[in-house]
Image 1 (cartoon, rainbow, N blue to C red):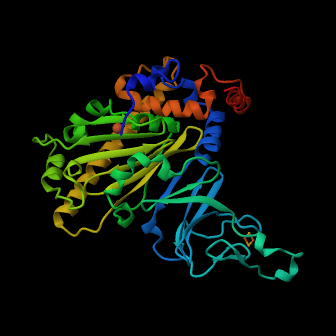
Image 2 (cartoon, rainbow, N blue to C red):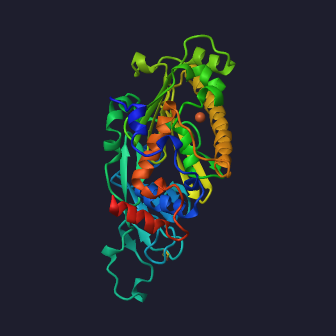
Image 3 (spheres, rainbow, N blue to C red):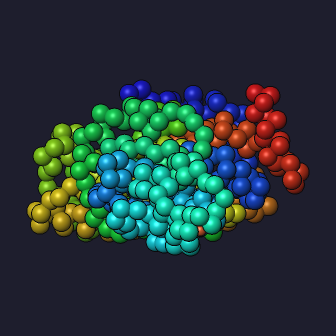
Length: 399
Ligand code: FES
Ligand SMILES: [Fe+2]
């Protein structure tokens, strides 16, 4: 793998070391455009194959006004559909996750659908004008399985997730992710700030020595961000072989057993693969964690994820997984505080733009990709109210 130099990442935009202009973190029209033109047109992580183990198992996912239903069919294929009934738009399953036996039955008037989305039955069908049932199946959403991880894309086109992560393929394959099971409940952290403030901090390790002292004690000395391209980055830290100041770290290191399927290079390494706009897969020797960050609305964002692991009954592995969990909860809480402070300051009149080091090039790569997708984010001042989408479109066409 060849990674980008900081110079080449920062050379891609004017004033790139200042970061995105402050207004882009505080503009409702831009948030709407980001939801519609970035998130709804990107691959979004939607779970793991183990969560849909049986035919008829389903789970739902929402992004802005769009709602998805992901379900395993009787042929065992996992598919995604808009969770919108063709009769009068109700969701077609009542719960966010569950199991249906051989049909999806809309809770409003009882239209039913086969597990592969075809319309099955309309109650009192004779009371409707002539209906062609074959045209009224649930509307499909693009769905991709990659190493057991489920991704959906509401709209748009472009490379598959497998293609996006092709450079990660060899490393990801080591972990047998498709055979893993969840080891905790899904978690969500809510933030009262723009989503980019979360991805910004998550894309650089410069803050690790100061912001995560215990984490630094564990993997921080060797921690490094590697930018593959503006859409994909890798970060890693090797677990320090010396004595640890934090008892929790020491307990984790002392307990962590060998994983038979990992090469020596990966027995003591924490690795993070990420892709634009906000997806991260974390590879620990004892488990993995998948999460993503996304906007919920203006100044409202979330980060949500879940951890998975292979079945392993060794008591030492169980303990190591628990120590790992505690370490990462602490890191998450520290990041939450730092995101809050940074986001608040960026809304202040005193903020004149960032000054970014080579160690923050991952954040710049994220900005570069956003500038490329939405060129309006490179303007120093926001377009006048009501014209942002149009201005962006003009910039796309002029490019
Ligand atoms: S809205 Fe689904 S059956 Fe009426
Ligand atoms: Fe952090």
